[in-house]
Amino acid sequence: MKRYIQYCKAKCAPRLSYEASEALSSNFVRIRKEIKRKEASSSERSSIPITIRQLEAVIRISESLAKLELSPIATERHVEEAMRLFTASTMDAVNEGNSDNVKITGEIHKIEAEIKKRLPIGWSTSYNTLRKQFVEKGNYSNAALEKALLILERKETVQFRHQRSNVFRCGV
Image (cartoon, rainbow, N blue to C red; front, side):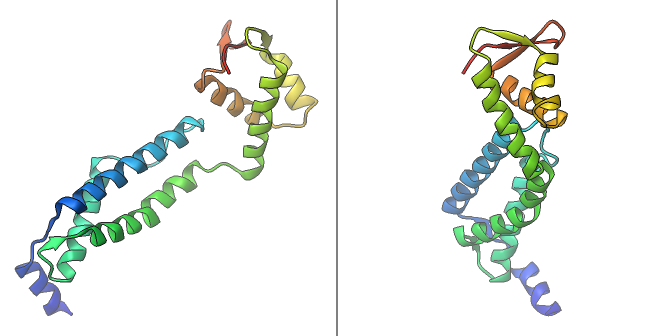
């Protein structure tokens, strides 16, 4: 096995084919959009940034897979396997880091819907009133209320006014 690996290193230096590089590019863009979408609906940023460094790592893995087959060209098949490995390792860690507890996620969606139902566009209410309605009387957690308000603020559905003491409904 050692001699085979030495031979692969010495005799083979594969490069990505055009089709493989296009597939890699589209997969990378898709992953970046997915991370951006998850960050938009969550209050935290991704624990693992998806950067050019990760793209370079996937290229190296693709070329290494081609090298193991003594292929002079890394094909789409090599890129697909490299992306599968990348997704299984890095992306699973990202998803675990950003995933909320199932219960709190359900609470967040219910609070968002209730705020939209109770607070017409153009109206405002105090933050304390919302806290009393949802946390004290509604049996929701304060964390779920905070996260729901943050998500609604990012979606430009609500705005905070007067040093966050007032919540104004500004959009759909």
